Image (tube, rainbow, N blue to C red):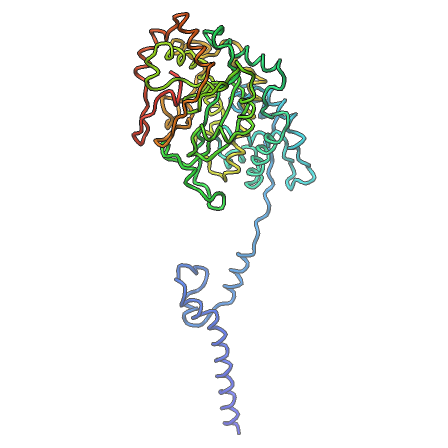
Amino acid sequence: DDEDSSDDEDSSDDEDSSDDDSANDIFSASSTDNYDAELLPIFDINAHNAGRTDLSDLAFLSSLTNEQKERWQHQRVSWDAHLELLFHEDTFNNEYRMSFEAFNELKEILQPILQRNANYCRDSDPILTEHVMAMGIRYLKGGSVLDNRRFVNLSRSAGYSAVDDFINAVNSAPELDICFPTSPEEWNKVRNGWKSRSSLPHIYHGCVGAIDGFFQPTTMPMQSETSNIIAYYSGHYESYGLNCQALIKDDLQWMYFGINSPGATNDNVSYSRAVDLKTIVDALPLGLYIVGDAAYTLSEHLLVPYTGQHRQDPYQDSFNYHLSQLRIRVEMAFGYMVNKFRLLGRKLECSMEKNSAILMACARLHNFILKHDKPFASSNWTVTDDSVGEEGVLEVVPHPNAPLGMSYMPQLPDDTFDTYQGVSFTRQAIVDQLQEGSIRRPLYNIQRKIDEMNYKTKSGYVIDREFISPI
């Protein structure tokens, strides 16, 4: 009996041992056979292979997986101390792209939208309106969100949220709306401003705006955003992007700014899609007009330069020259905005919706800064080829990918672009006045005209200069 009992116990022990081995198989062979040993550094691999799993290893791994870091308490930058340093160094305008007075006025406009409730802040220090504005403005001027959030001392998520909140606040504040003149008196004021920019105000006395297109490079849009991704690709710039249409007053403020079309769309088509803009222009009284480059269709209310053989006529060429004194200002406006908000000088990497919001926020802030700080009020602030380097000339930094030393990337027509000559008795009447007065292009400008008549793109396509920038 003792031997039987002993055999039974041995048998029972063997079964228990077999059960244990089966249980251990769950954590041993079935686990290690499918994974490289380097992927399981926390386990004793030899023990696994021998079927001797140490369950304490699993408990330790579980504790690491479930462990949460203690929340870091961010102590915000002292805004008063920050201002004291900027005033001492006289760098506030450079840091925030506007005067301190303008910044405070902008704060008053945005504060009802941006103000945070300290009771909902998870840190001991609340996020002030100034902190949100600092994050947004520093981002638009080209700074990194991650670098800027360390300056303000925000969490990563709070930093990105602050930038989004700032952009949305700027775009939703009615005080920052971009508007057309709303009365005859306002239109007349705009008209007088343009007359002061022309060397022949008695002839070019009907201009009330200058229009142009702007190409903003972006990353490739997602398929969820558009069914026609290729429509956003510009062959000239070898980049995806957006087409913006803008109309300015003589003081470089936008009267209209819209993100109308994908990047491959030419200006003429994009202008037709800007319904609000086109409706206003078409309704102008006879004798009033806006000016643009040759990519637009000539009409009584949109004057464009002569191209091709028409420029051989000295008075039609003279028309082009004097028209360029007005057209150049829209180029100045784009250049000023891109140099003020350096983020626009590179590819925008967000969704197309957010990229559009960024562009619109920059345009609205552009107007606000010009209106408040009036940086060009002390002089005539014009651009002519005989005044380069003189006081009163707007300095901009050339964009490496832009044609003709321009500081922004204008929309370029491609080889499929068709010009529509159109008809304008207003343009012909101006040419007749130039001929009656024997007014021609100045001699000093003729050689420049010859040198810069055409522009060759990266792809080798030659474009008439009058489709891009004044000469």
